[in-house]
Image 1 (spheres, helix red, strand yellow):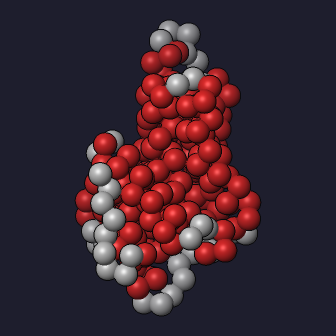
Image 2 (image 1 turned 180 degrees about the horizontal axis):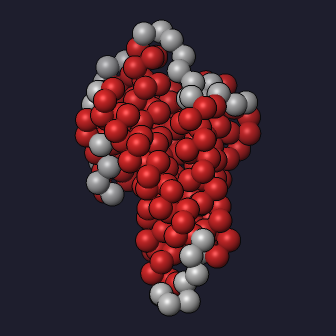
Length: 215
């Protein structure tokens, strides 16, 4: 994984192959009866696996997209990349039918695959809004403790929106910097240093070289 995210082509291909194998095992596990197992534990493991696979596929795509952008080019995911992502997204949707915690992750990953495919940004923005609004709704209804499970999705949605959506869909640079600082704090708390650094780099660009403290 480290090699793949460091930009090494052989590492990226190796990680993609690992994703494909894990994806196949995940799909098989979703089709096995849980009569002899603990269904709740199965669902937790399946969700963790599915979310990890989708997050890794996203990271691999963003690494290649970033490299292309640096060259002034536009990178669009290949059919193979999209097929793998769609398969894991299908697993997540299926899991969401019987395991509620999986449902809140569906919108974020649906938005991601649209970004990968270069689809119309209008619907993509609407899907990201589900993750962006979720924390406020939970705070109002259930309190701060119950809000935590959705904060990582919100942080990731902020990062994706600020990085990939057209400027016409986004708020002013100052507001974007505040949102990115919030996302950086959340991602740092959950141990996602790479995404946290991405937020900080975007804040620096928005501030013309001056970072806004994410603390």
